[in-house]
Length: 256
Image (cartoon, rainbow, N blue to C red; front, side, top):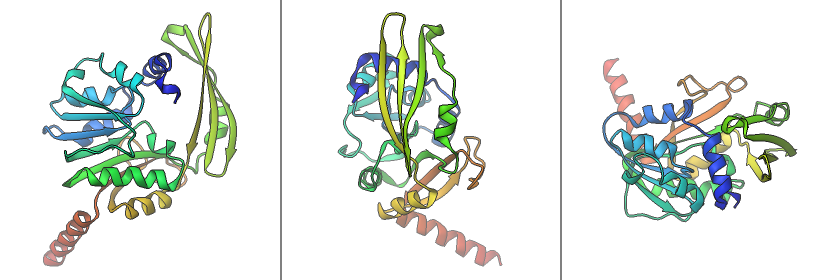
C-alpha cells in the first residue's frame, strides 16, 4: 500500500534503474514487434524500453502513484497503462509474452495468490505465448546478506536508504526500509516469500502452464541449486509445451 504514496513511488524510480534483468527481458522479447503484458510493471521502465523497440505493451500495476511516474517517461504514450491488481486483471487481449519482473513474484505470500496470478497469465497468453518471471534462490542467506548491506545513497546523496531485517522465518523475510531526507524520513515495510524451484514449478503446473526453461542468472546460464542467485522461469501453455516436446521427440527418433 505504501507505493500509493507519490513520494515512495518517486524513490522507487530512483532505486530501480534499467539493469541486467531488463536486458534479459528485452532480449527475450526479441526484435520482431510483439504484444507484451507486464504484470506489476511499477514505474514502467521496462514497459517504455519495450515500447521504444516497437512492441505493443500493456503495463498493469495496483498502485496509481507508480503509474503516474511511468506516464512521464519517453515512449509512455505508446504503452497502455492499467491500474489493477494482477489477480483481478481481465482483458480480451492475448499476448505473445507476459513478464513479471523486479522479483514481484516474491510479494505473493500464499500459494493461492501465486496461483491466481499464474492463472491470470495463462488466460491472457496466445497459444504460442510465453510467460517469464524470477524469484531469488532460497539457498542464499538473503537475510544475513541484507543485514550486512551498508546504507545506500540515492539522488546524489540527498536520500539515504537503510534496510533493517525485522523477521526471517522459514520461507519469509520481513524488512523495514528507511529513506532519510535532509528534513524528513519515510519508512516502508515489506515481506517477501522465497519458494524453492520445485514449489514454483508445482504452482506453474497447477495453473495450466509448463516450465520450458530455468536460468540461474541474467546471462542465461543454467540454474544451479546451491550457487545461483536467481531462479528465472520461462513457461508456456501446457498443451503447447507438450506438443513441442512431442515434435522434438519425433524429430530425434527420425534422425536416429
